[in-house]
Amino acid sequence: MSRSSGVECMLKTKLNPIIFSIFKRFGALTPKIMATFKKNICIFFGFAICFLTFGQGGFSIIDDDKFEKIRFDFVNNLIVLPVEVNGAKLSFILDTGVNTPILFNITESDSVNVHNTREIYIRGLGDGEPIKAIHSEGNVFKLGNVVNYQQDFYLITDSDINFSPRIGYKVHGIIGYDLLKDFVVDIDYGAERLKLYDPDQYDYDSCRKCETLPLTLEGSKAYVHANIKQYTAIEEVKVKLLLDSGSCDALWLFENNEHEITGPMKFFDDFLGFGLSGKIHGKRARVQRFSLAGFELPEAKVAYPNEEALQFIDVMQDRNGSLGSEILRRFDLVIDYPNQKITFKKNRNFKDPFKYNMSGIELQHNGLRLVKALMSDYKGLASNANFNQSTKIYLQKQFDFELHPALEIAEVREGSPASEVGLRPGDVILKVNNRYIHKYSLQEVSEMINEKEGKLVRLLVDRKGSELKFAFELQKML
Image (cartoon, rainbow, N blue to C red; front, side, top):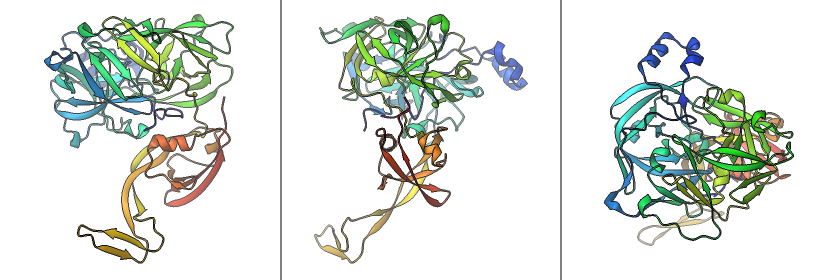
């Protein structure tokens, strides 16, 4: 599996919802929804302090072991952890920007028992409407030998809220602060494993190549301070950034002249991803330099989300943006919530270039396709040995039919190379440069169509039953 997406995030997993602001939007609500809001407690997530963290049990290591090692999958710059919820085996994105776990994409086959429930309405990033969720209390969450017997979570009931197709991997939810607050967390991106240490038994080793910064906790949110040098500014600016492992982007900045964060001179408008409340658009650009704990990353990529996506975030205070996984993955990390500090050690990913989506294509899975597959590579004769060592001789090529995920175009950026040649959302990709793609992952195909500037990309697509050919040259946007 690729350690880096190598292209623009197929998904902005900013699933951190905040409560629907009553005084801002009541005029647009139906009486039924208004009544529902009046019956429920106002709950703040994501960018706000959550007032419901008290009263819950915490996570602990069974048998009082010193630490627990958890293997994870690293998909599209996202850490995906195996988590059992009331005995059901699920997959969760580790998102340092979220407070209470959120579940979605739960089907009948997942069979999750839900305890002590009530309905609420929540809002996340995006320009859409608030969505219905179920608040559940007293649940058992388990990661290996780490367990919490009194965990709250929020279940999104809308079946259309499903982010798995955008990352090409089935995920059921996100988990963050409620897990991290009880441990010292050692994350090794290269080995795809993390260790959860009992804070009372963790010893910091001497490390000459490591740098430690304060980790500012405000409610359930963790912030770090860094420096940026924008092309539009004369000097570096110190910025306060939300630590956001649930973002597959590198850096988000919020334009604010008061905080000396100005918009970029050179940029392009782009789809940044999905939040719970809809699509997120904004500007993509580069900063001249990003500096963190003594480490410098020149020409780091940055996104400036549009105001529409942030309009319901009322508690930004002095925050300037977010630090996402495209930068975090370049370090091995020790995240220490109990002692409010974070340690960085650069790893083999540190010097990876910051790449943009040059094709203009965003991909997603959509259903399954029946693929005719050659059983043998032989031309003419092929043999097949059975259990008693006898051999069958075929006088023609042998084929079989297999089911594979259909990889379709979800978004085409206006003015991009893909747009200029006529590719459309809904086109199903069959071949990239004469290679059938049904055995490649979504991330691998994204790499193929965004490999390097000037490369000619040839696509064979299925458009409503017709096979069409397209070709375009990748163009560097910045």
